[in-house]
Image 1 (cartoon, one colour):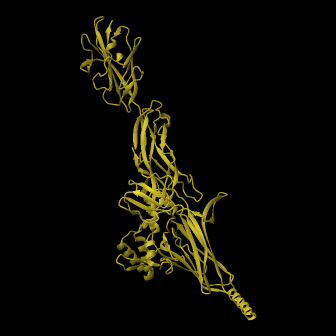
Image 2: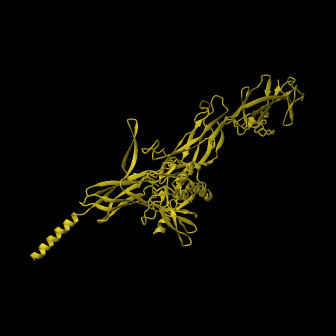
Image 3: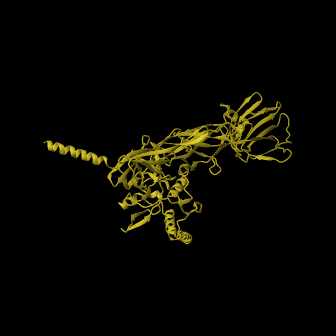
Length: 162
Length: 473
C-alpha cells in the first residue's frame, strides 16, 4: 500500500515536471476594422474590434503567439484559414521572422506567394494544375523556426469582405 | 479535397469583380480599393509591372507576346511568373456579389509545433452589415415628358427602383422638382407613391433549382416580412427589364415564378414601380410656357451624408440630366379675336377681302345698312396661337344702342369646324344677356348656367366662332 502511494507520488511529480519542462504555445486571434474620425480637424484612423463589417470593408486579423512554457518551441506552424466570404488582400500578410506561405487548396499544400497552385478536375475526369491569384488563397501559414520560452510575437493579414 | 476547393473557389480576379460592380451602376464598387498598378512579391520586391490602363484582354496571342517580351527582358523565371499573372488577369471570372447582410464571418487559427500538441485560437466572429445599393432604372421612366395647362393635373410618371444592396432596407423617396424660371411658374404639388417602401434584398447562398414552373433560390438571413406572394417583384443579379414575381419565401429560401438560372452569390433584390404625379402649378407673369424639371431621390435608412467609415450616402437620383429628360411643360393658350359683319337683308359687299364662313361672306369694313329695314349679322372668330390650350373662354359684346339683338340668333361653332353646332345659344345654356351686354360661353363645353366658358385647343385654324344678328333701329 505504501509502495503504491510512493510510486503514485513519484509518477505525479514526474508527470508534472515533464509537463512543466516543455514549450507551450498559446495563440490569440483578433479581428479589427479601421474607423475614420475627425479630431481637431485632422482625419484619424483607429482600429476597433470587427464585431460588424460591411461588404468592401477590410478586416485586419492579428494572431498573437506566446510561448508560456520554459523550453524553446521549434518548427512552429501557425495556420489561419482565410474566412469564407472574404478575400485575401495581396501583400497584407506580415510576420517578423516568419516564412509566409499560402494555400489555394484548403490547406493541403502550401507554397510561397506567386508559386501557389491548385488543382481542378476537368470535364473529362483529368486534373489540371492552375496558378492561383492572391484572391484565390484559402489559407495562410506562418512558419517560425523557433520560439524561445517566454517570448511572443504577432503575425497577421487583411481580408476584404466580399 | 482539391476539386472541392477548386469548385468553391473558381478563378476570379479582384479587378474584374470591381469592374463588374462598377458596371452595375451606383457606388458600391468604389468601396473596393483601386487595384495596384504593380504586382509585387510579398517581400515587396517588384517582379513585373503591368499597367492596368492597358486593359489586358483575354487574348492568348497577346498574352504570349507579353510573356515573350518579359522572358526576353527578365529571364525565364520572371517569365513564368509573368505568364501566371497574365493568365490570372485573362481568366474567365464569374462576378462576385456581396455577402448577404447578417452573415457571420468566422475565423480561428491553429498552431502546431514539434514539441507539443496542436492548439486552437479563440474564434473571432464578424457580422456582415447592410450596405445599401439603391438604383433607379433610368430607362424605365415613362413617360419622360408631359405637357399640361396651368394648374392642371399631371398624369402618372412611373420609374422602377431596384435594391442592389445585400439586405432588406427601408427607402425614403423625395421630390427634387425645380422650375426653369421659378418666378414664372409656381412649384406645383407633387405626390410620390409609395413613399416609404421596404425593399427586400439578399444574396443567393447556393445555386437555384427549378421544377419547370418555379425557381427556388437558397438564401441566408432574408428579412421577408414585407414580401407579398404573387405581387412582390425581384431582380436577379441587378438585371433590369426582366423581373420575377415572388411565389413564396422564408428566411432561407426565395421561390420565384418562372425558370431562371441563379448561380451562388447572386444579388437578388426587390423592384418597385414608383408613381409620381400632381398638380402642374400656375403660370405667372403672363408666361405661356414654362418647365418643371423633375427629380426623385431614393435614400435608405442607413442614413444620408457620409457614413462614419467614409462611405458615400446610400442615395440615387433620377432626373433630367441631359440623357434622361424628365420634365413637365406647363403651357397656356394665346387667344386672338376678330369681328366681321355682313348685311343679311341686302347682302351688299364691304370693302377689302371677304371672309367666308359657313357659306357666307363677312367683311371687316365697308358694310352698309339701312335704318329700320336691314339686319346685320356679326361673326366673332376666336383663334388660339398656343402653345397651350385655353380654358374657360367667354366672349362678351356690348350691343350698340342703335341695334336690337335678335336673341334667338346667337349661334356657336364650338370647335371651329365651320359648323355652328350650338344654335340659339341664349336659350340653350350657351349665352346670356344682361342689359345690352351679350356674354357667350364659347369653346367646347361652355355653360351659361355654370358661368364657365369652354375650352379652345391650340390649333392653327380658327378654333371657335360666334355669330349673332341684330336689326338696325
